[in-house]
Image 1 (cartoon, rainbow, N blue to C red):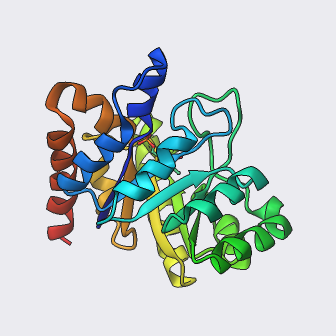
Image 2: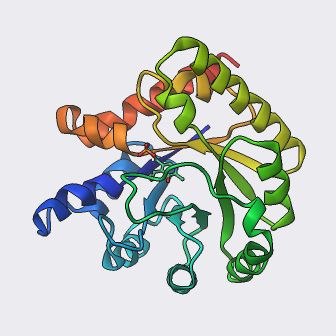
Image 3: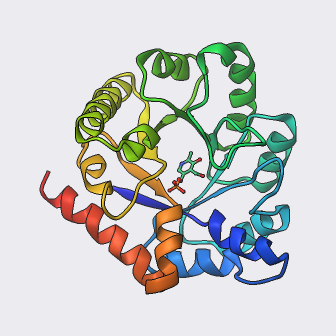
Length: 243
Ligand code: PXP
């Protein structure tokens, strides 16, 4: 299983002072050396954390592992992605007032628009994933629009406060992962995963990649980024060994 390290919140700290440190590109290099399999970042329309300059510096600096650019499916972002050429784009919904991405992309209601949008990205050599809620109709629509992969939104699972709700959400993720894999899509997952809740998700065999940001960056304040990435990798690989 691959670990994509999302570096957005290194930039959140920098932007709190509108200064030059900490540098998310330096963070990406440390994560790469610590065993991250991918660098993930979200260039938001309001540029609240990652800036345009960061993404182009990432492209020049990170050579050994792929870049995964999360972005809203807008014309502005498509132009940037085509220029930047990340190995993958993950299409996410975006609302200005939200604290973080709430819910998955509604691929069903955007089917016609996304077909052309995804086609153009793929013609430029960029693989495309869509970030969706773990629902059958969203998976079917993801196949229809030509996505290469789905990233299943684990937020409902991660934010559940009762054990029974958590168990229910985990079952929903398992069923969605199995169904998506059967349709031929690659299956990833992410959002809200932490050192304490990651292992049940990592044990779903169809899921081949997790993208994790906040918890790794938050704990890097205490442990250092290298150790924070290593610890997360270890938790994931311990579970996969047992499969
Ligand atoms: N995957 C996607 C598609 C996301 O939008 C995010 C948040 O930017 C993440 C994963 C990482 O979520 P978290 O920061 O909660 O680990």
